[in-house]
Structures are given as C-alpha cells and as structure tokens.
Length: 413
Image (tube, rainbow, N blue to C red):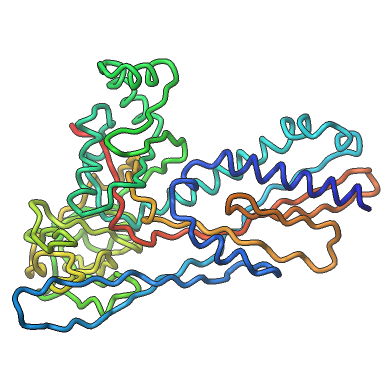
C-alpha cells in the first residue's frame, strides 16, 4: 500500500510541476485568491463562488468647503466552474519505468494539453474588454503598431508595472521582423536567434498560439441610439458595470446582429481619464456582453453593454450621455474573424484554482498544490487487463475582474 501511495503522490507532483511550467497566460494574471481559497482542507465542488470586493473611487474637492462622498463599494464574483482533466492509463510494466521516462512519454504531453486549455479559458476573457486599438485584421509588425497598446493603457491611467502582452503567432513574427533591424544589440539578437520578444515598451510580451479569434456579428443596417438620456448611476450597476442600451436602425429581424465581444462607439460619447475625469480625444468604446438579435419594423435591438454609461462622479466613464439617433459604429466588418491580441495589467483578469474534494470511496487519492495550482489524481485498477487507470483533475475559475486595465490590439493599415 505504501508503495502505491508513493507512486500516486510522485506522479501527481510531477504532473503539477510540468503543468505549472507549461502555463503562459495563467502566470500573467492575478492569482492572489489561490492562497485564500486553498485553505479548505475538504476541497471545493464545481460551482463554488468566490466574492471579490471592487475598489472604491473618489473625486477631488476644489476649495475649502467640504463635500462628503458616499463610499460605494461594488463586488464581483468568480465561479469555480471549470473542471478540466486528463485521463490516462499505465500497464504495470510502464509503472516500473523511471519517473523521468514516464514523465517524458506520458505525463508531459498530457499536461501540455491541460495547460493550453487553461490559457485558452483566460484568453477567452477578451470579450469583456471594451478597448480595442489598431485596425482589425492588420498584423502588428512595428513598434509604432505595438505602442498604441501601452499608450491606451497610459491614457486610461493603468499602472505601468505588471503589464503583459500576448500576441498571436502571426503578430509575434511581424514584431520579430521589425526587431531584427534594431540597433539595440540584445533585442535584435533575441529576435533573430531565439525568436523571443521580451520586454517592449514596459510590456512583458509573449507569443501564444491560444490567442482566440473573434467573429463579429452580422452588424448590418444603419444603427443608431434609440432614446436620449440612457446614462445610469454607478450605484445601480456597481456589481455588474453593465446596462441595457436601446438601439434601432439595424437590419430587420436578424439573429446575431451583434455577438458577445463585439465593440462599438457612439457619436459624441468620448472616453474620460478615470483619475482626472478629463475628456479624452477619442470616442468611448463599449463591448456587447451577450448576443443580440434585431426586431422587425425599425430594426430595434436592446444591447447589454459594458462599461455602463456614467457621466459624472467618481466612477465616470463617458463625457456625455448619447443623444437620440446618435450614430453607432461597430469595430470591424460583420461576419469577419479577427485575432484578439491583448495588452493588460495583471489585475485585469484573475485565475483561481482550488483543491478538489476527495471522492468518497476512492483510495490512494493524491491532492497536490504547487505555486497556486491545485491538482487531484485518482487511480483505479482494471484487474482483467492489468491496467492502472488514472484521472487527473483541476478545478478553477477565471474572470475579467477589471477590464479597464486591458486593451485588445491589432496592427495599423
């Protein structure tokens, strides 16, 4: 029995170290909740919810007269709803191999697949990010192209430390081509010999084959805002930061007129600096958080959008509420797919992995934790065929906890 337990524990420890090493996006996002929620000795079930408080904000008083402000705290939650796993089997002969042989032949290939799945789930959070710079469909192939990303973060007062960028293979090779011409020896050598990007403009930059594609909804017609004064207060949206925007002018009776993750602007509605509240010289971008269909007659569509349109106070997001019949412009062309590169501060997104419950009746279960990653390995035996079967599971949740701290980025035409 002790040898069996040792084998299970050894395989679990080897698997978790390989898994952690293969992760890319997961290492670049906020992980501060892992420790807090890793203390439950009994583990968690799928569907457990973790509640997080949002930071409050204030405006600056002018002059000697006090003007007290209410402290309005919002909250958001991460649902631990992603149970992913790899199932594999060993013969008794294979289990007799040295751990390094077993690791190379079986464990590492399995963990690469699992790591890629976790990274894909994190990168799928792009749909919560309203900011999108560059021209959709264009490859990022110069420092000028890349620089509009961190520039946008600067304009939104995003902290300069802990910024990361994830580019698709096409965009990475576009950037590498521009770096080989640099007179900065180390950057040029890294690009030419190693294919590495490294730190660019204060952004720790990586390639990921898991950068997703986003396909824009149908997006046809002449869309406009339907009704004035569609702004809200922060208190009414403090937990979701979403609202309904009534629009019309879309092509009549169209399913998927816009898709979750689509980005658009509204004429006359400009972005504001979240610290100074000064109006910025570009239109506020919004993203659709749920698929929307258009109705008959005037092509109406009720869009669920983020950020909410807040025109005053500490949490102001826009320069003004949209006017009735203000033009709406969708980013990209309807029905077209675009790569979703992102540049972000680590606090834009969160990943939390939690220990799982040990199944009742299972023996020799190993639950391991390493650098915030938790795995559970459960062995079971097929006596007829002399095969040891194993299931390795991870339980985690991902969330865009502050999408203001991120931007999507494309190249420029």
